[in-house]
Image 1 (cartoon, rainbow, N blue to C red):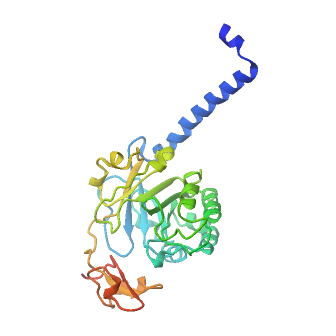
Image 2: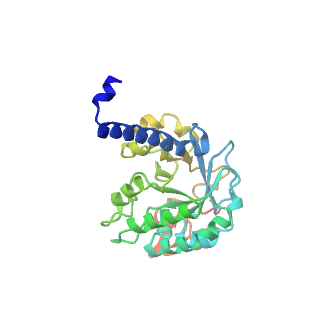
Image 3: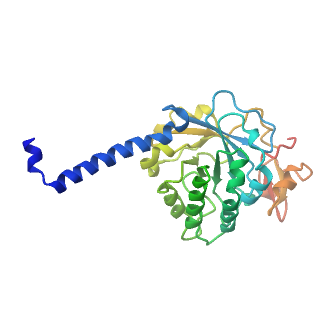
Length: 298
């Protein structure tokens, strides 16, 4: 008591606030990790729309319906397919790693208009796959506004990108690390999933120490469940869990087909175009590119 008498009122108030902040950080910081898994690693999977795969065996916390389409197309084509996800919280993926999954600022306005409809269709959240962007356009404010509206609509927000930086979204201010840093500091982002692979066949671990302050939000996308073993040591942080890319009963990996560079996914997945078994655009000819995992016969 003598020690307390020596402290001024300002010092006592400051000390009290510090204790409150520490307790609040501990309480709320741990909730994201426990939202699905009650302290266990959160487990998620992608379900490809182009392949008649089964939900991987076991108990899952997150299921992401993935088509790789542009955000507008993903909503228009897949909004009524929430029942496809039969295990875990249902997330609809928007965007992808090819030109077909490119992001434009106007896409975020479209998403904002559709949020109520998306929620009513049975989705629990949205997965923003941000890898390809319109060049030289700032996306920071547009994403931040969209994420806030998602939470208002009762939808969770999961952001995924190639490793630690969108590989084809780095052409100026408001892209690249500007975007990633904005996601790190955005309380409306529930989970961030760095994709630790290129083709999806093998793990390519990255140093994820940049996410050290939000470990409870980091769910790396990895090829398969065994890649989780030792992942924390390989990435340098205590990841909250993982999302697997490989499918159960998936189509053969060399079902590659050619399609136009713009909106060519439909043509490639029709299985009527030229095969490109080597996975290179050069096999397709001018104006064409190679699309992987089309679901076509190998």
